[in-house]
Image (cartoon, rainbow, N blue to C red):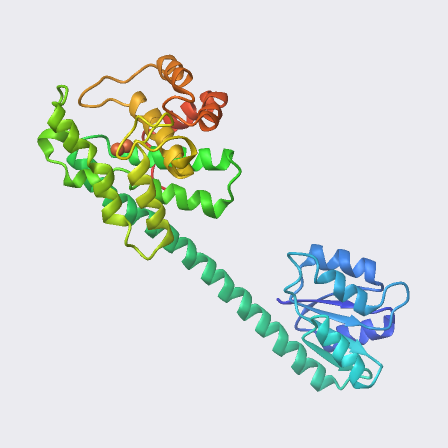
Length: 338
Ligand SMILES: [Fe+2]
Ligand SMILES: [Fe+2]
């Protein structure tokens, strides 16, 4: 049953309106203050608001309602004994959807109430559907990105979960750096693709348990540029971010990384974030060329490489919250994708 809130200082009008609208659940307030409280608690589908009230006029109530985030969408119909275009104009300017003159014509009142309630409910349903579809697309987007990235990961026989964990750590580091949710989410998706360039590296190099020869290492290092070239021409911002991450995730703060030997803040922030997240996970993980490192050894490594291999600020965030990152790493070992 749709809900209607009447805000009117005349009890007779409240009774009359209530009896005219039996198909709705009706709530009523005799002054603006009470009306504002009820609007927030009841969340009606429509508000019938009297203009002429003592203490707080209907205009002021309307202005305040439009400033409250979760009630500002609720349609407001002004009730007025006043005549003249000024009243209509002010009401519409304040965001009302309609106005009805007192005394009411019962049929007109019922028709207008029904129209606005139906419209509001339709809009609310549409919004819900849009939100649901957007969430579906977001999940699908991540899933497809993850599957594409896994092709490179499978080739290198590393655990498929490495990509997902790195992306989660990038997301967390972004959060700690104070970035907004959209930006963090973009970095989360983009960082999944950091090693996509490995699809272009021969298997015998990717999976060689022994130390790589100088020539093999040269080829191995091309995966960052290969990944960058695969992604950079995309028209999507998130893929351009992924290209940046693919290119720079092996750059080092001291400029001794690859492919370009970029140093310090000349490396993009996302590149510096992924460098920390990638190494953190790789050290804890088992690889063809190494056994997993202990948590304490990983911590000591980051302490020794703060401001050398890694951005000192991002490293400090990891070290200050080390137990939380370790806990997250463990919880992600066999978790499902979200
Ligand atoms: Fe890499
Ligand atoms: Fe990686």
